[in-house]
Length: 367
Image (cartoon, rainbow, N blue to C red; front, side, top):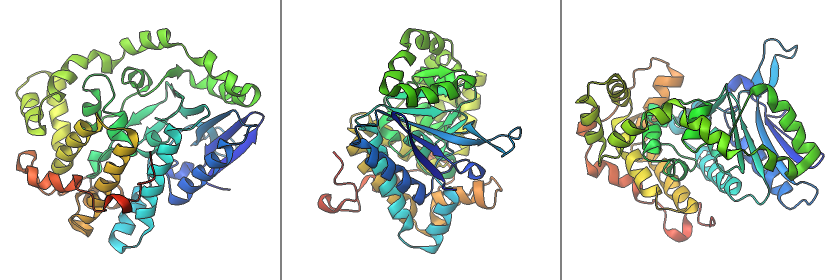
């Protein structure tokens, strides 16, 4: 069966990511299937609304699968590692087409509903943050964990994370910390928290009621009340105080000078991440805050090219980070440079210089 199931039911176009053994990680073929479905449905008057979910594992099910429970773990990083070492254009195509898909979703003319049940990391955020309704549950585990592999929060992360309240975006981008459903509401990264048991009924309502099913699900007052009680909201004062500082070195120094358990734990997390990419990511978010989505995606397309080619092959922090996490799994990346204090502005600046002239940029058509 296909890794992307796209079907028309009643008034809805319904998409299921169907690669549960790989945590529904996105491949180039999946990105192309998603794009093809959305383009086909965009101008079809019979389709009023689009829903997207991920197939999860379920040992209680005879088939071993459940239509909810796991959304998407992001891009297929093992594929990135293989292509980065072997060469070829497949990875270039992947990022160009993935970011184009992200843009399409943000500007989709029909209600697009993202069911972010279970894992929603990286690329999974890219195909839901542009949704008209972003649904999370008590099982949601959300993160942009790219600094853990020497990458940066792409798929529009510079745009949507920089628009989180206060400095929550910088905190999530730099640490890569995982948050749950109520925290996602507090961060402005979700619109609705539902019990997972209600998801099948909501999914079916899209088919039976079409676009009319979406509005009754919105309850901003109730969601605000839940958000205010979240762990993330409770840490907001500390997050804004530290992550509003001017540089990564200043953030870490201030955290390490603070004796609270939260500050100590946060500093320890940052010390594990790629020092170079921490600096790059902070600059990304500070720039992204004033950019339109298309402009941000073009910047990120430049950045991801440099992640793999500025220092090619095993010299890349991104290749090394993926190796340590997903290939050799020794969880001991050898970052270059090894310390946050060793990163210079001259190391960061090249990530923001486009390798393409404006007229030849692979995302020049986005507006």
